[in-house]
Length: 142
Image (cartoon, rainbow, N blue to C red; front, side, top):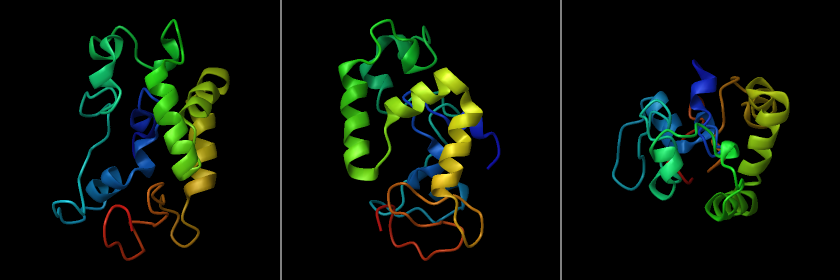
């Protein structure tokens, strides 16, 4: 995917494995409730569509990534990270710590290893495990 680093959200999510981003990227026709579209958190200056609504520092562009927050991690980030870890097997906190310690390329390499489609090399969705390039997609969840 082009501009992969721009697809790393401030919270540690990689938009390149999000069903909403993949639906947009692969031009899946929009259907209300089935295929929401998103160009990614940073490209649309959301600085994280979920966290920005709850974080003044992200909203005001005082910080670019949640791990820059003086009291990192905040309770909101811990909550969403735990929810994703339990539901999808990915921790935002792990992603941010990997970026902090080894850089963005290390995170991208790890996620590409975990989510690359073995059939076509595209990225599979974290939300449904499907490749939007070569699997039949019924909704962003299945």
